[in-house]
Image (cartoon, rainbow, N blue to C red; front, side):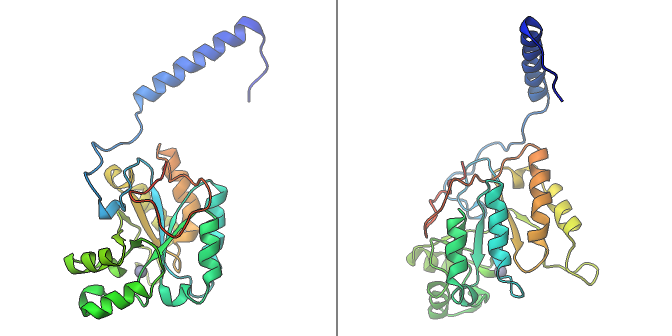
Length: 244
Ligand SMILES: [Zn+2]
């Protein structure tokens, strides 16, 4: 609570506040990593900014509109996320893809039916990618890819995008999917290197969407910034990603 002050007293207090803030800032520097990796870094999806990108995989099977509700929440907090949707479900709900992009989120390819791409033939790999959500980023299911998948994806106009922080929200440590509190603590305790300019992975059909408000609060409290949402996006993301 601030009380109104007049004249010199207010000026002195304002200066004191500036000095205090400057001291506090130099005493507790914002988290950072030494240098952004050179070239395109698949684990950071080319994100060379210092900002954290939240990403949502798969599909919210029981409640498809959970995707756009999550998108609306992030939009309200002025945060841009990326959604890697499974093609066979997203294809049946093009309105969800459109709405997410209007909300300012990148929507990209996570294959058509979520197989392990390295186990497939060349033709099958191409089919899985080309029947998925049209974009220019591909997140291979399970993060499983090698040189062949990378080059097949490139031939179809895609860069590979994985992650630096895995929330492990799909695990069932106590016979149930990992709780909101546990997901939140995994992100809170992840190494600075992995968060600063990093990519956080969670899924639409587990507890990650419900953990997101707390994850954002924790990141901001620790001095991180999130990928900035500055309006609707098109089919292709700018690569390297533009999070500023
Ligand atoms: Zn997946």
